[in-house]
Image 1 (cartoon, rainbow, N blue to C red):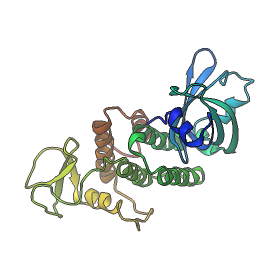
Image 2: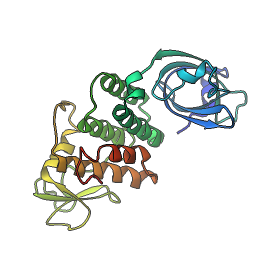
Image 3: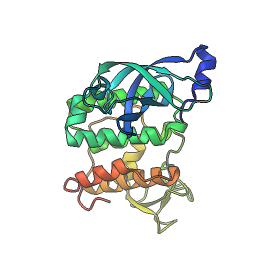
Image 4: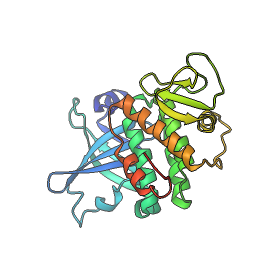
Length: 265
């Protein structure tokens, strides 16, 4: 959800907002202006406009690149404004490797796109903020793994209030089966004895998804190519069904990793 300037004005009694933010997206409009989609540590998602930011000589051109960690000063001239004006920004940290390495860029893009899509339900901004910073810090230094992305995606679905239900068969309550079927429309799991249609999952994939909910989850878990395909397909389709949008970042990652995940969705 976009934070309405008027709501914050009532709380701070002034039209100027200072915030710590990560740039999720920068969209050019007009000849040289741009809209920034920011995820702020305390305020959630905010849209801010910037003037002449795409010009080569602009001081903001490099600072406002996607994934940058900033301290921003925002101004709302009118109470009914939905878009803030960016008046000043200081760079806290630039995740250079996420911006320059194509593989890392694809992973980071998936994460910020999901935060953008699920922002209406992400009331626990501090928790999501910590997740985002943790992922960026790790991926900036280490090669990203699909299992790590699945963990972050699962947590975002949970924080956004649209997590899948995979603890047991919704019809017979079975917790073990050789084959499972997941239906995004219901958000539920069915064992092979209760259903024969839906997204097909092996028991290993279901066990992995259940482990994602465990606070003691270990990041070194690795899936087979088939398990990656199943988990990837479930998360992608579940998100797209419940938000009504196609995940372009996931599609880009699919194309990039076709050789890594055979027969990828």
